[in-house]
Image (cartoon, rainbow, N blue to C red; front, side, top):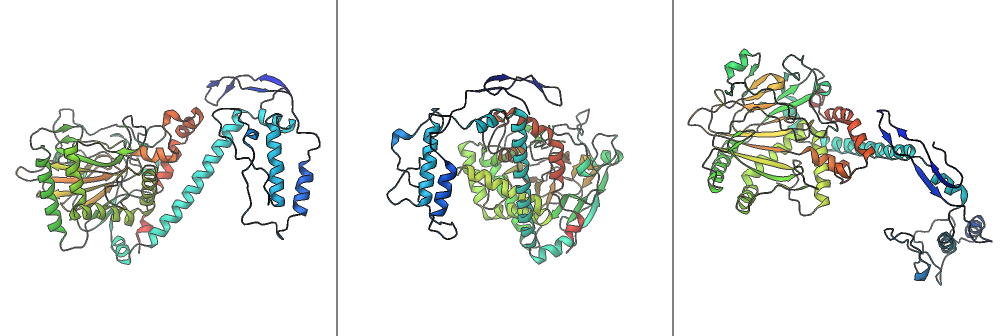
Length: 512
């Protein structure tokens, strides 16, 4: 506790943090003590009010809190301080009303006289360290309550799954994986992998390893020669990507058991092909960091200098086309199947996404979800005609979160279009009409070339990590946070990553 003189100004020495950062001295200014009016006794008023209270148990459901004091009794010491509602006398005031009136007299007196000396000295002597410690303690308690509520809600959602979904989930086979960070690194489970993150862990660093030195595209043969494992997959049977801690780090979710699904996917692929033409994207090349193909983005995001969450910007002509896509019942089925599969395989993580997006949308009625009830904030329609991605990370997504990817098109998945998970050293067949989930911010990924004369499209769904940080910082930007709060966010980054990775299901959760 920093010491202050009883009166006047006190200048303490410089304060240093554990990291050696020095802060300016703490100055506390206070004058001599001022006292309440003569004859005032709060204890006597409390005793009189209790003795004369007609309510047997002292419980009044509707207290008469009259706000009728004359305007001149309101004292505002600073123009940026909201004046309190004065509690004045009323004709039918209860004994508690009298007590409150007496307390208002004390407040009025305090406009001319300061707080009692003991209390004034206590407030003035509170150090910066103690103040920030109390704020950190409050944040930890709020976070603990939020996590407890989240776990309870996720558990409730977990039990609401249909029995058929549980049985289907229980039949999923496993693919053992380890996270490789760097070519020479030994594989590690997700929670302990030293993946490159920014200090607060809400987004990852864009450290890409799979780009070839000669600019040539990877082939299946080259990757197998480099030590990658080839994984056949029929696109229907679910398979779990499981690390050495038995944590499900990703899922080959497959497709619904619906005889009409193939026809629906074919219709959506044709719709995406027509969308590319309507948006004037038939010409090319459309070059960006993920590849050379046309794409449209829609939904809610944050970043790039935005001061709050906003709808992704599109030209008016493209916006009209996107609205038509999102209104199409076939497109909605594809988007909502991914959301349902997310709930089946990672219910706690899905509920974290859902509750975060709910709070984002509550903050601004102008924000538009892609589909009602969907837990993903944004989606990208990759319009091809041959969607072939380069090695990349979606590093602005939530690092421990999942991205849903649905493939569509006419390609032969045994010969082309396979997805490569670089950090897992896996090449996985990825048929049209199937959906997979991966932590795309920390698992580098791309897909192999599509054979000439064939088409490949994809739909991805994801949520930016900045949305989670914005919600958990109570709607503040990093630059607007107190320096101590920012430092605390960075200091707890590794713990945030570990707590986030713990939101994934384990193999024991998958059993029926």
